[in-house]
Picture 1 (cartoon, rainbow, N blue to C red):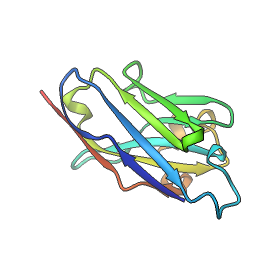
Picture 2: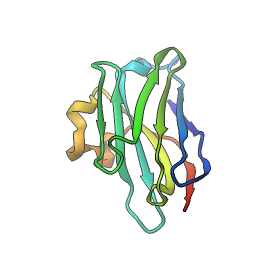
Picture 3: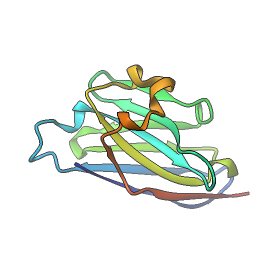
Length: 135
């Protein structure tokens, strides 16, 4: 399974971006895209990787970190094997490399805040996309 993020870039504070996480490689796999929870993470320079949102198509549950709740929205298009992260009201603190990851056989509700940050939970990672918010 491969994950590819896109949609990052430079935006002014208060602006919006939509990130995409496109998954592939399921043809030779026993599981489908909908069997995975997809999480979004970000890592700013000198900071630890932070889990910010998660979605699981199997039960429709979502989770958001307090730092992005009310500003970011996660969604999916299972026909395209893609998860999106709509980011509105961006702040300079949102500047980071954004990653998506996939975890088999779990849900956003089950992961929640306590398990999002457990790296061993996540089976696959993308290469990341840079988001820079200028103030």
